[in-house]
Length: 114
Image 1 (cartoon, rainbow, N blue to C red):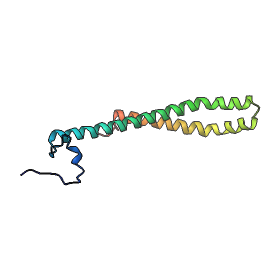
Image 2: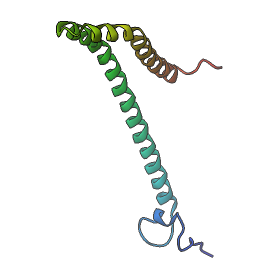
Image 3: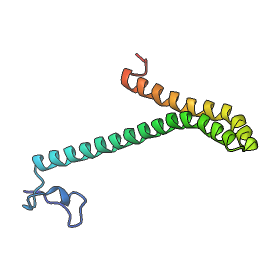
Image 4: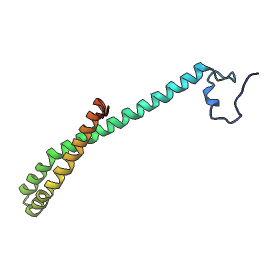
C-alpha cells in the first residue's frame, strides 16, 4: 500500500519531481535548504551587528569633532551642552561595543560551563 499526502498538505512542496511521492532524497534536499536559509539569516544578523558596531565606533570619533566644530562656529552654548552629554554618550557606546565583542568571544569559545 503506498502512502500519499493530503491535497493541501504543507509537504506537497517537497515533491520536486511531481511524481506524487516525497522520496528520502527530496526530504533531505528540503532539510538542506532550510539549514542554508538559517545560515543565511545568521550571517545577515552578524553583518548587521558588525555594521552597528562600526557605526558606534565611528560616532565616538566624530563626537569630539562636533564639539570643536560648535566652538569654531561660535556656538558656545551648543559646545557646552554637547560636551556635558559626552560622558553618558561614551559610556553607553563603549558598553554597547564591549557587550558585542564579549558576546562574540563567548560564542566562539563556549560559555565556560563543563
